[in-house]
Amino acid sequence: MDLAEKEGVKIHFEHKCTGVNLDAASAQFQYNGENVAVQGDLLVGTDGAYSEVRDAMQKTPWFNYSQYYIDYAYKELSIPPNADGTHRLEVNALHIWPRKDFMLIALPNIDGSFTCTLFFPKTGDLSFESLDTLEKAETFFGEHFSDALDLMPHFREEYQSNPAAGMVIVKCFPWTWKDSALLIGDAAHAIVPFYGQGMNCGFEDCSVFSELHDEQHSDWNELMRSYEKSRKENADAIAELALRNFIEMRDRVAEPMFLLQKKIEGKFSAAYPHFWTPLYSMVTFSHIPYNEALIAGDKQERIMQTIMKKPNIEQIWDSEEVENEILAHFI
Image: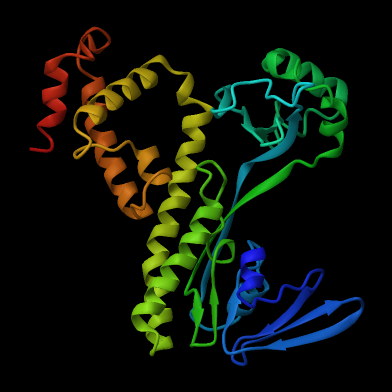
């Protein structure tokens, strides 16, 4: 924000958007009880999963829209730092407590604390709905996450005060209206958080739009069509990848055969990085488009499912035989 302001961007806080006019590229806001109208050459809706700009687009012809809430909610808790400000768990790690139908994760913060998130069914026999007292919640954590609970001195206060929030997937198309309005970020493609890519995907929208602007700056209509066409398939891909990663984090990381599969993949990738990049690395640590990563990841998974069915794979996993069988798919 500081850098944006140095470039001349004016940021206005506490303005609630109450409506937009797509054709006029204008928006109306409420601020301190007064109506404020703003008009420009281009209206960019970066206003999140419940976007006012997208809501206006939904009322236009041929606009497709869907939203889907998964059956899970999440609640944030915390692990405070040690007295000297250091982290109480390994700092260079994502901590996961996988429990098949639910999970707890912990992510480090720069102040020495960890933000912990419980992903848990919204309703059912074992759910946020069933843990309807602090005593039940504390007993549940003592049974399933006792080591984490020991590090949470503020558990009762945080569990009671922090909401169990929903997680929605938003898909729509087109992302633009004529040459006067467009959507970026969650307004166009809200996803569940299990790949940690929601904000990154929004930033990628910006970088792709900027690159296309440099190429097609004289034709805004062509620019906006190129933008939405380029980004739509990648937004759909990361939505699918994020859902799959939820199952992997919640369930599969506790399976010995899954962990063995990852060891085989890691060994092969280290030996042949030009043939094999782990899916997580493609998504998180590269500029490979999400859709290409999804396609490559599906191919790798098909190969590994064949490998994991080999007799005695637990004994021969690091053998030349297994390496050559994987290699045969690429040469």
